[in-house]
View 1 (spheres, rainbow, N blue to C red):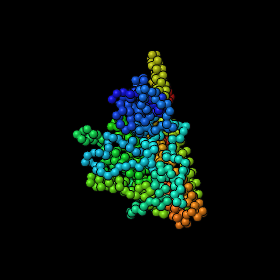
View 2: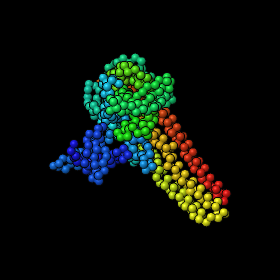
View 3: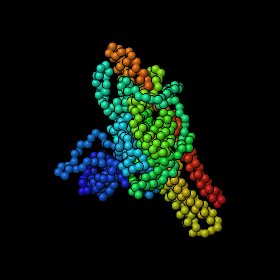
View 4: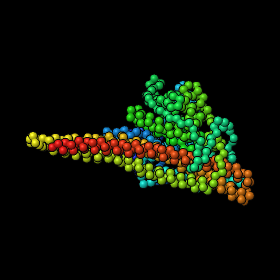
Length: 568
């Protein structure tokens, strides 16, 4: 393919270790390969640096005219590439990464074309595998491969409510309907359910119930269980042409063991997002284009997939879904094919999912609206705080492997040099002080090494939790927006009732369905807060315990050096 020039529309900070370029707006690149796949091109800068960049971030320059200078109002998201925090050759940990947990949108840009479902006879490929375009807590065709929360915009807010517009509506009979058919309220099925347009479908065995707690509605609890993801193994097929990593999954309460690939996790995530439009489906840890068979990356992905599965397993509704249980327990190929087709043809998805939720008691619409609005502000503030905390942790990690290590090494070398100088005057009475300075030099060299290694024990685990929660937080703005639109629709109907344009019976039915939506949202909010308290408590306990152990080890080293001087 002939090389062409392209002008950069949007700045992109690439990961050098992952083979990506850092590019700047209006920069001119030479495109050397447009067949990389997954939304990436390869190019060369004017300085000769070669690497990958998102194809949607540039435009091909016409030979006869300069490239257009006007860019669209906002940059499209970069294709998601996950880079695990492994140590780089310079001693860093690779902290500035667009990795781990993307915002909730998945879509086809997440697909690894080399790992499509077309795998011959191993898995059945019949049936549909359509990804919903935009749903709360899940997907959005308006933001494919949603932006990672990498802490690059520290002063801003990383959350963006997708698909928003003014409440443009049209008159349809006595009910005002949204003319924006791409709004979250419409695409989630919330409007269709609220207005009674969802066809009744059999929901036997899938009824969901609430119970009233001191905090408000909660989902009925389900049997708790944990999952282990172990033994990642590289396998191949088609006589070695195609390679992949298989993971072993074990269920704690049954001991069931199944083997799954990343693409199967991806399929499960898409099914959950399509089905549970008003629930927070955790974003799946992202794929990686380069280095995906490296040992460090495979182990980090294993850890994150295990965390993702256990996050889903702790949700009292999602964990009991047929598709999730099928993923965890099915071993037989024929049964897998049958279950896969059934999941892809599930009728109780989108608006029909709400039919499985039991009626809730009458709720105060104003109080509900205020509570959900407060939660929306809480999510926005927590997201900003987590982004800033992530940036500070990343900066501290870099200091550990950089300036802290170097300064303690220099200090140790200075003490060691002084000990060597004292050795030139070899007197018995001076030998202890010489040895004490030598010991002190070794102590500070050991301290330097401890600083270099410490982030693996405290900061990196904390960063993993932060990244996971940034992904979780990204699922809630759409949920809050659906509730807001639902409340406005109910108020419109009540106004129409006062004007005698709607019957009391119709408004009562809409209000009852609105109560189901509100109770579902409030139950999700309460579940999030319960998980947040448990997770962040455990994360900070581990962080502070490791910090204490770290400083205690340093104190022990310094005390040994002090004892040497006491013996002089």
